[in-house]
Image (cartoon, rainbow, N blue to C red; front, side):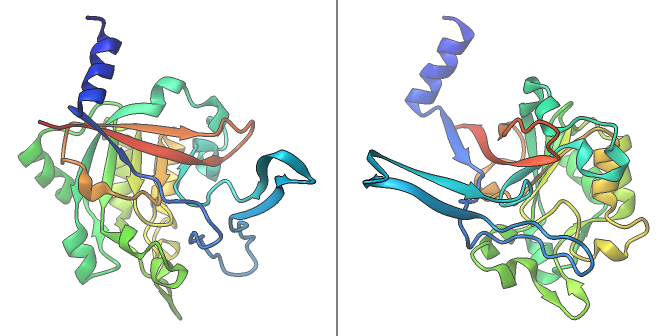
Length: 258
């Protein structure tokens, strides 16, 4: 049987489960909030064009307004100054949108410390138990933060000092960018950096290092708890926006089930 026919047979038989990693898009979808004088993204909005009425008797459709980095979205290298000469989202090779993935679960640590930072030694300890990170694959960083996605306030978790959300240390960001075999890094939070990353040296090290190295980001993922530590495959489908820095996307995982 041809390989694709085997795949479809396994899918229909339930031997492969499709897990949706995507947060629904609505006006309530949390969006990042930058302080003045920086510009901010538009929240998602839906404006009806017609709905089986005099504006269009047999069809229903809408206009949408949103930013490139709203909801579950894909960061292309050109999103950051360090990647300004890199690929825009329309230039990402299609083969890069389907890749193996591993899940590192630090939800217990993030529950105890919302400013928890992933370090290189955490990844090395995980590799000692599970094996090496996947070549040209994704590291998906589970923190349990998707449970907060119904509330802008809880999701951003900000106080007078700024947001408090888990992320990675500057050293870990550099290691992921320059020494790991990964093609991308995925998180459940509003961005790939920690909430306090504006105060790091350098600021926003995950964006700066990974995108500067030509790698990708996936943010506001959900349902990572349903994935195994190893063995899944991620399909990330951003819109091919010409000159776009990123795009909302539908992120799916394929998981083998016994």
